[in-house]
Length: 245
Image 1: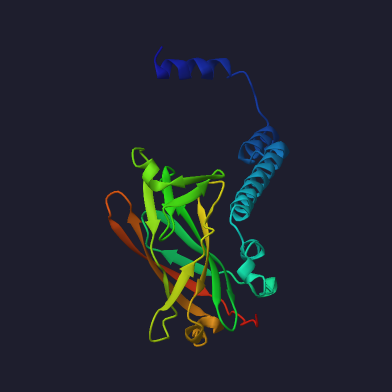
Image 2: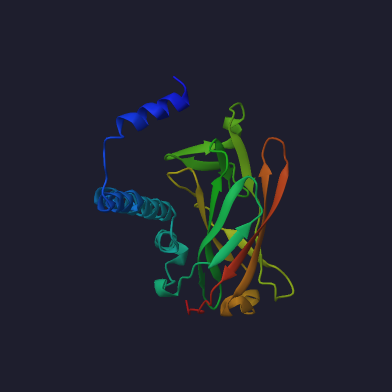
């Protein structure tokens, strides 16, 4: 059946029907109204809430996996003389890094009259990666000491972290830092280090305590190929109050 034949049939069958003006207006009004479903509206709200709660839970989980300054301090005898004022611990308000091997972030910072302490968190881009601190040939993984030369025949990527310097972009020379030996491998395969400045005289001229930008510089070596990746982390700092140890 052609389209015009079908149209003629429809016109013939409905020709006997008569519509009042009121019926036409009511029908047009119903056709123009937007469909509103209370159930759909409630479902959309529930979905949004679920997404928000999921995002918040994920963020909280990430935070819980990162060892804090307080946790590091509580396990170190040589820091037992230092009373950590947790209200004076600050976090960067923004940061960006240059590494292609790791996601790198400074999580917490604490400044005393003698030392700047900070935690550095590193997450390998490849989950089959082990990262070793400078000068160490072993790390603790799942409670076991693992040496990198015992892993030479595996397909794991073996990286080693180099020394770090902080430049507050005001002082003449970069400030040397050191990473403490209890290099933590977190449950998600990331790593957290407790780091601090070395030279007391240098940190006294640390001007970024009023807020500003820091640059953390370091390198990562591939233990197999000896390829070296030079890195910088630019840190936007809030004001930090110097504490008396």
